[in-house]
Image: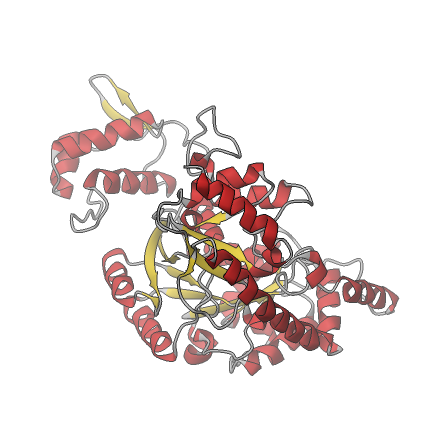
Length: 478
C-alpha cells in the first residue's frame, strides 16, 4: 500500500501518513471493518520506519478512525467520525472570547449572529446604507406587476433565461465569449463553488488555494474532505514557483482563486502571471475556478483567465455574483464554462436544491436591464475610494501598516505593530467590545499571517473612532 509519502515536503512523514490513511478511508478505498496493513509491511511499502507507522496508527486510533484488536492488528473503525468544519475539537472551555476558537467558521458565525450595534470589520459585504434597498423594492414591485412574471415555478435547470442572456453580454465586456447555455445561475457564488467541488473532487483530492486567501474556500474544501495545498501569495501574486512544485508533487485537481482584487490583499494578477498560471494548469492538468465576485468593484478590468484561455477548453470555470453589490439576501450568482460541464453542474443543483431563485433572478435582471446597476456600482467605487484613505490614516496612527498598495477593492490588509498581541487574540478580545475582526490566520490554511488583520473599508468607515479606540485598548493589554 504505497501512499506516496514525500520526505521533502514540510509536513512530517507521520502527519502525511495520517492524512493519507484518513483520505483513503473517507474515499472508501478502505472500508469499515477492513484490516489495515501490518506495521512492518506498511513501513516497507512507504520506505519509512516502523516507529513512524506506529505513531500514525496510534494517532488514528486515538481519533477513533481505526481500532486496535489484540493479536489481530489494526482495523478501520466501524463508523467514520462525523464531519466537522471546526478545526479544533471543543475543549469545554472555548467561547467566542477564546483565541483558540478563532477559525473561519467562528468568524462567519460571529458576523451573522451578533446584534445590529456590532462593528462588522471582518465581514465581506457592504453595510445596508450602501446597498440599493429602494431600487430592490421597486424591482420586486415591478416584477410582481408583470403578467409574464414567474412567481410560482421552480424555473428551468439553468436558471432564468433573460438574466443568463444579460450575463453573456456582461462577460463579453471582459472578452469572455460564451452563450446562455454555458451559464448556470446559482444561489450565490458560494453555491457555484460547492457545485464545482461536488462535480470535480473526490475525498482526498488535492486543491491549490492562495495563502492568504478567501477563508470560505477552506471550509468548503473541508466539507468535501479535500486536501488543501497552500500557495504563498506575494506582492506579485501567487508564488508560481511554489505552485509549480506543488502541482508536480501532488497532482491537484483544482486551483480556487480570485485573480482580480484578491481577497484579502486586494491585488490583481498581472497579464504575465495569468499566462504562466494557465501554462502550469495545462502542463499539470488541473482546472482553475476563477472567482470574480469583486468584478464590479474594479473600475478598469485586468485580464481574466477565462478570456485568455477560452471557456471551451474547460481549463477555467468563471463565476461571479451580486451579493456584494446588490443584496446578500437575494443570493444570485452564476458559473460559466463548457456546455457539458454546465449540464453536469445543473444536474447536481437539481439533485441538491431542485430549483432556482426565480424571483431574485428577475429582480437582478430588472436592475441590470434598466441601466440602474451601472450607475450604482460606479457610485460604490467612488464611495469606497473616498472612505479608504482616512480609515488607513487612522489605522496607521496606531502603528499598523499596509502590506501592499492596491489601487481598488473593499479591504485593507494590514500588519500589526511589533509588540502587539497576535491577531487572533485581538479578535477574541474585540468581541467583548462589539467588534468582529478578521485575523490573518483565518485566511491561511497553514495558520500563517498571525500579525495581520483584514478591514472592510465600508463597514469600518462609519465606526472608525470606535474601532480604533478598541484596537488601541486591546493592543495595550499584553
